[in-house]
Amino acid sequence: MIDKIRMAELTSQEAREHLDAKAVVLLPMGSLEDQGIHAPMGDYLAADLMAMEIAKAARADGVPTFVAPVIPFGGKDYFDSSHGGISISNATLVALLDDMFGCLDRHGIRKLMIVNGHGGNVPAITEVALRWRQKAGLFVPSMYLWQVAYGELPALIGKEKAAKSSGHGGDPLTSVGLHFYPDLLRPDLMRPAPTGTTVKGLAISGFSTITYDGAKIQVPIEALEATETGAYGCDPHLCSAETGAALVQRLASIGAGLVRDHVAKGLHD
Image 1 (cartoon, rainbow, N blue to C red):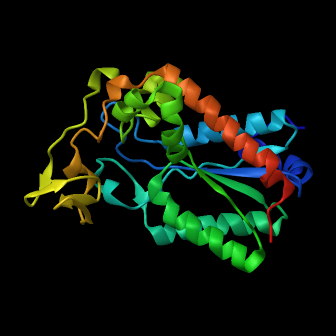
Image 2: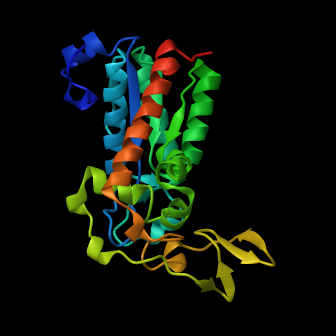
């Protein structure tokens, strides 16, 4: 098996030889938005590195796994208020994913898995994955990293701590960042998430919701209205590189297992 993992590093001859029908290709994607005033905006950095960890673990199981260039811009949502953030419309993201699927499928590279680091990408991923299943029989799973990580945190650090550390701007991404690229974070800027924010006299209960009479109601608000620090519902001080290392190991194990047990065997209709 060739040592190179990133598709971008393959020569065209190496691509012809190694990106065959047996190869699994991971498609990492994320966003460039407010991740908390203490953290780098590009969560795609973590998604890309997690894809590499999954690929390495899958290769250790004998599966020829490669990582495509990361999509750094997320689908447009309430994080558009992030100063310096760059997002793209859902239609643009759908078109981009659609073209990527088409290029790979043309060359017989059909064993694909998306490694996603941004919730705003989910609608586009769903649309494209369903379209390609319907028209070409492709069955492409998508691993939403932080959704999986939220579920793993209680077992790794305890339910009580996880409840306090989990949230936007906190766990899992801050801990993963402290593990992958500690020099890019600013612990001195960490602040507990603000509470009691309101909009038009209504209590904000999320990045797109308010609470009225005990019920959550969708409203057109922006992230900056919910929190000025980028953190919501958590205390980033509780995050740590140790937690990040444990999460990365667990996510890599789950991802590599899915590749080994299912994607590599072919899931096509």
